[in-house]
Amino acid sequence: MNRKLTLMIGKIFSSLFVLVFLLSILPVSVFAQDEKLVVDEEKPIVDTSFTPTEIISMRTENSKTTEITPGKYSCDSTIGAIHYKDDYSDNNEQWKDIDLTPTIAKDGTISVNKTPYELTIKGLEILVKDKKTGATTSLTLTDVGEGLSNSKVSTPSLKTGVGMTIASNIATDTDLEISWTNSKIRYTRILKTSLAPITAKYSITETGTNKICC
Picture 1 (cartoon, rainbow, N blue to C red):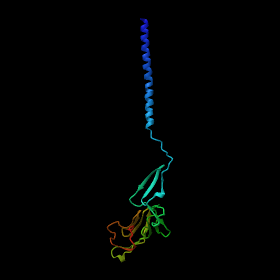
Picture 2 (cartoon, rainbow, N blue to C red; picture 1 turned 90 degrees about the horizontal axis):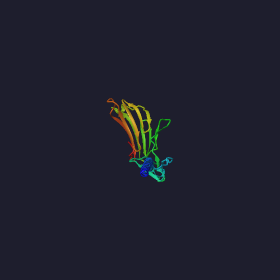
Picture 3 (tube, rainbow, N blue to C red; picture 1 turned 135 degrees about the horizontal axis):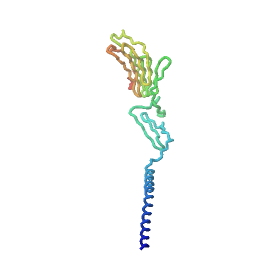
Picture 4 (cartoon, helix red, strand yellow; picture 1 turned 90 degrees about the vertical axis):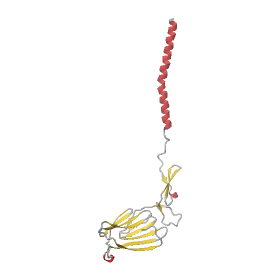
């Protein structure tokens, strides 16, 4: 009887030992499994040392192509021009980035030429040449006000920045704004109050069809 009791107690302890052992290793197994899942979900390592580079030889008038990762490219296109040529008849000339920054000579002449056109501003006179067609336009505001011959415009004081120059107070409450974009030039008289003269006289000379101005 004692022997049977001893064997039964031994089996109970053995079963408890196995159960305790299983419970002790179960969290380790689950943790290991979870850790493996996390590793599997990690994103692939990307080479951050690669610098996206524009492929200049693939430029067009309105697009840029960039190698964004080794062997992978993107093409960004626009509706208007972002590149220009000095000679549009030369198929071998490389497309260049348009730059609207003006240069100002010692005599005050303003020039913009890193564009599809050449723009020259001298006081109130502008000269525009379309590089594609060769057409030119010369435009000058000569008189402002009623009785044009009695109201000559004054010599302007120009304030110039990227894409714009303003001649302030060329007549009573009147400014002249000359602005330029990648493909267009505007010549705008601004009437600041009701006292500003409405009538004006311009001198215009054109050769060919110039779609750039004004």
